[in-house]
Image (cartoon, rainbow, N blue to C red; front, side, top):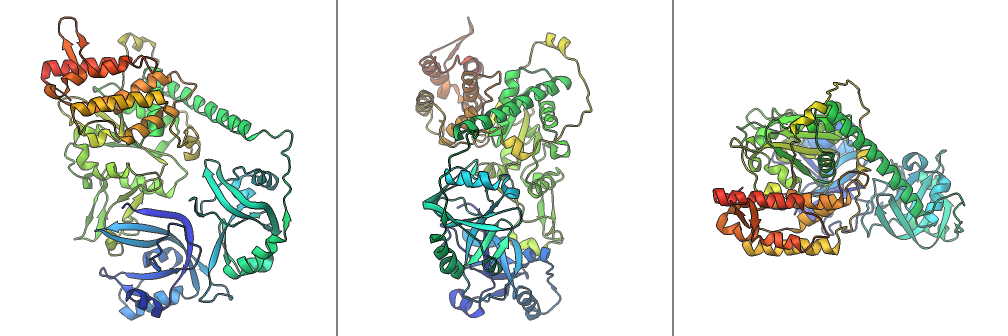
Amino acid sequence: MQDKTWNMNLVGVLPNEVEVLEDNGKNTIFLNKQNSIQFYIKVISEKPYNYPDSLPYVTCFTDELEPWGFRDDVLATEQERLDRVRSFLHDNLLIFKLRHKVRDFKEYYVASDIHLMAKLPSFNSQLKLFTIPIFSEASNKITNEEFLTRLQHRKYVGTNEQISKEEFDTPTFILWEDEGGEMTVLGEFDNHTYAHGGFRFLPIDVIRHIPFKEKWQDESYKHRQVMFVPENIIYGDIDVSLQNGDPFDIAEEPADTKSEAEQQESSMKKELDREASFMKDFIEVTRDEGLFYHEKDLYNFHTAVKTGSLVILAGMSGTGKSKLVQAYAKTLGLGNQYSLIPVRPSWTDDSDLIGYADTLNMVYRPGDSGLVNTLIKAENEPDKLFLICFDEMNLARVEHYFSQFLSVLEMDEGKRVLRLYNDELTNRFYNGSQYKPTLTIGDNVVFVGTVNIDESTHHFSDKVLDRANLISLSVLPFNYLFDIEEKKRNDKRDPVSKDIYNSFKNQQRPLALTEREVDFLWAIHEEIQIAKQSMGIGPRIIRQIDRYLKNLPIQGSLSRKEAFDLQLVQRIWTKLRGPEELLSELVGEYRLDDKQLENSKLLEIVSDFPDLSDFTVTKRVMLEKAKELRLNGYTI
């Protein structure tokens, strides 16, 4: 089971000492084995659908309270320390996000990202709060009229990052806040969907609305874009009042308002134009930097970067791989948000890259690479884009020093957590507040690697190849050098934000591969499995190929057929390695007399699907692999 964070906000209080003792035999506040204070929180707000029923309390560490002014005096007596926590929390509610962790085969539920809010005079020990999301012009960039029109016509009204997006967590009511702070309750809703455009709420019947009365607001707890409302107000006032509230007439959309399909088409065109402009700049920057690549290579690189967890540029030394990544970062205007990390041959495990816990001196020592500091900065600035390049990453064994990253990059976005050291050491480390035990790697961090393929480097295992697009850059004829005019411009570009970069992406989930393409890939998989059961094409590879193809820039010079051919080479053919006895029938035989390929099972399948692609690169790679088998007895 992987670590998980519920992104919605929950509200809790310090529970009664007696009930905690009865439930789990522990005190509400206690010293753990590391001499740091932990305490339990009782959740009093609405819980997500998949919240564990068997979880009455979650735990929290007092370092989460430090931003709110709490300091633990380790020189005081144990009872004094515990009493200080109890006194500090006595008059406060805790608003937090819940994290699920698995350590040493044990499960833990920990509160993080704590915010304190003073208890109102009406607070009582039986209080139960319900979550109502708030939408507004300021937060959702939409007018009241447009919001109501979209709501009535079952359209997407925008996002709210403090509530659950899960299918069974539909809020019964929502709030609209106008510029003057006046609020309106709307409902009731029993279903919703969530997509790129945010939430789409589906009502039980008609949508009714009533003012959110001042006396209700006085007894509720507002935190950013959420109102936590007591149960008695929900069912005693709002529910009853709304049944008698005014219904919205389903108003016709204004004549000059585009249909939803037209709006989506217009939005898509805008995003396509923006990406086309970016690629034009990228091509110009590469030439200004003295690089000259086929435009198809540049489109291939860009598409792989925006859709993959890791992109690796391969080729012989001196072809400008690192410089290409630098040019991409320059086009994005990243400046110090771009990091180049030279890999050292001496690296043997991930401590060489990210650092280690120095328990002798009780500090965390980050690696000299600077990677951890960059990731901390990226975590603290989630709206900014960061590009990290591992230069000559196969000078050391990637599976050793990059091991934890390989596991992290396999996870879905939002769940990528890099562990630096054990949680128990946080409060004992002098720099524990600077270097937290875990780092979340968001979708604002892009990883690229460069590799040289020669006798001084290590080859990749399938574990690496399964997670990477391995791109071999073409070397153009040398006479193109006469056409290159290097221009060392000092133009400073505005940085591209994460949201703008994400607008280049097609993040729709349905499979975009055609049935014909799927049949082809299945035929290839079955043939590879005959040669070796442990080889083949896994579902992850299929999803990654699909994501690449549906993100191919429409206005670019790389066609879908060419891209499909490249994906076979970059995601599948790279894994065809082994001795001649294993691969000769699969790859084919290389004829020395005319340097042609014959008796290739894979090329037989390729020839059965001429409508999918010319497979120019595939045929060339198959010929190279057959030649390696003939001359060396194996292919790598």
